[in-house]
Image (tube, rainbow, N blue to C red; front, side, top):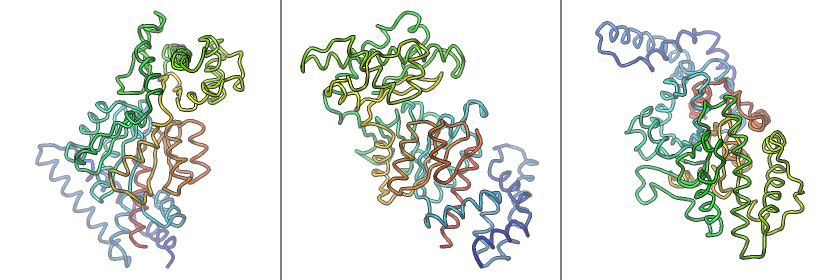
Length: 418
């Protein structure tokens, strides 16, 4: 019988909704010291197994179908089967953004939901490595990863953290490869630009901007964050101003580096930087226009030596959240490649989940190389959603990352059946 027919039969003949309710209760039951509560949990666990046994007895591969029904809705199960029909293989690593992907300030009080954490532990128990891929600092990520997943899991050797959007990779339990500082491989010219910006970014900022932002504690990237609630009108104001300031500061730093190659006027460098980055990113162009800081230069006016540096340095804008300067040679793709190498995944087929432009680069890399699939929350950036909808349409509701993870989990269950 075709696999699709078996799934139809599974969801038509069995009360899978109630089965999932029992599974969810058993999985995320809070730790309590109460005999009554524990007895209730045991009763639910026994009923769960009874219902699973009915499915086990009804199919030749009933054990797998019982697990599918206990963890996935009909829609999720058929989506998983569609993925298996298309790709014919299981996912062998998860590549996961954190902010507004695994957790959402709008729905979950900025904590990773318990059901998401539980699904991640299930992937780990089945030997699927987890790559946390984020723009946050290493210490921040380590803190909530250990708090949510547990110290043993994080240090198991199957978890890697790509932090600061790819400037470093931390994979506990791998000896000399445990911490890789990828930014140390950049040439001296690029590192000099970043050193110059970092030394000036707050001391030289206009007073009102300096009071409204702070510098994220990165090892390499230079990230301005608002001193106001992310997404608020005040945060929007200071981040828009901060973006223009960072572009100008980058131009001045590059002008200083380029002095050895000839006389570069700082005012010209500012015009070139604004023209180049406005052309590269429509959101940056919109900010420059709204701030009345549009360049009078054209992209073709930028000298080749200066353009070469611009092409290696990324300016990122996150609306009412952050303005950042990073290295295009040290993006999330570079970090994920390094993480997969340490984890010894030489034939990757990964699930990438994310919401921003930096995540999009990983999704595009995965698609171009047939390395896996991409998924995004429904509030992701336009470009991310366009990419996801044009590939496998894996979009999930805000704060519901567990639902997408369950689809991938079921894909792996179905892949075992061949």
